Image 1 (cartoon, protein in one colour):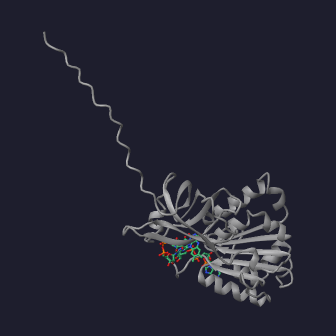
Image 2 (cartoon, protein in one colour; image 1 turned 180 degrees about the vertical axis):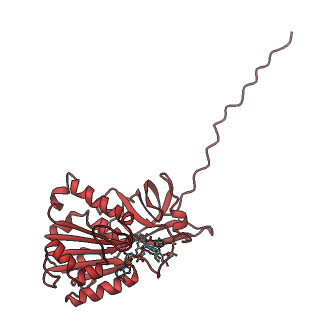
Length: 280
Ligand SMILES: Cc1cc2nc3c(=O)[nH]c(=O)nc-3n(C[C@H](O)[C@H](O)[C@H](O)COP(=O)(O)OP(=O)(O)OC[C@H]3O[C@@H](n4cnc5c(N)ncnc54)[C@H](O)[C@@H]3O)c2cc1C
Ligand SMILES: NC(=O)c1ccc[n+]([C@@H]2O[C@H](COP(=O)([O-])OP(=O)(O)OC[C@H]3O[C@@H](n4cnc5c(N)ncnc54)[C@H](OP(=O)(O)O)[C@@H]3O)[C@@H](O)[C@H]2O)c1
């Protein structure tokens, strides 16, 4: 008689899966939306301890090929009450960060250094009647935050968002954001009659055209919106665009008598660069 031999595997625990390496200051991507072939927005989890003033920016990025964090300044596009953080980004074809960042997916991690700073904050302006948000391209990001912050409507009777891009598709992120705000159950009432949206294009024929500098200098925007000419008693402004735009719009604001302020010395307008460099 042959003995039957039952071989049972020794009782061992299954080997643990190798843990996904965590990035330092890692946050998880929760949403990604591509607006054009050169613009996208995404949302990430918010570190519990992160407090910021709407309009500020932080350093975000990915781990570089050399094993060191590759970080860039990004305006937080979501308001300070939001549970998540939103960013609105360019895709620079050969850009060290955005050539990779544009491929992020839900569930991926990015690095976010939780040290918000910036000049486009309410504290840097003296009280006024109206606030003008003046942006080109991705410079709308800090205003995407400020437009969604109830404090903006508590502080001002009128909020004017001027956004200029070359083409209409580049305005779409801002256009949808304003539309969603106006239809929002909570903030919609607060925004009603106060938020005026003035988008223009410069290189595609649309209903409203022209550079922000030209529409201010010629007085066209004041005529179109039925507002008085900008003046230092009533008007405040926040500016975010390319270096050339910032320089030119500052001269226009100064011609209306507005003076540049800062966190430490609030005045009538403040400026921040939307990016560093001359162009892609
Ligand atoms: C205070 C501050 C806030 C910023 N906030 C944002 C933001 O909210 N969203 C955002 O997309 N970028 C923002 N930037 C620019 C950002 O820091 C990076 O430059 C951008 O992400 C590109 O990174 P990169 O490594 O791919 O290319 P980089 O080497 O950083 O840039 C390469 C070139 O691309 C051009 N470029 C860079 N950024 C832009 C842009 N946003 N629009 C048009 N051309 C650009 C410039 O000519 C630059 O020289 C901000 C910059 C500063 C200083
Ligand atoms: N947008 C595109 O389709 C596109 C595509 C490929 C590459 N790029 C490159 O990407 C870089 C950034 O492009 P961008 O379109 O985001 O930014 P941008 O060149 O700064 O233009 C954004 C808007 O700001 C206006 N503007 C520029 N300088 C101004 C000034 N000094 N005063 C007032 N308004 C001013 C532009 O008007 P004007 O049109 O009158 O200049 C445009 O409507 C550029 O180097 C560009 O060559 C852009």
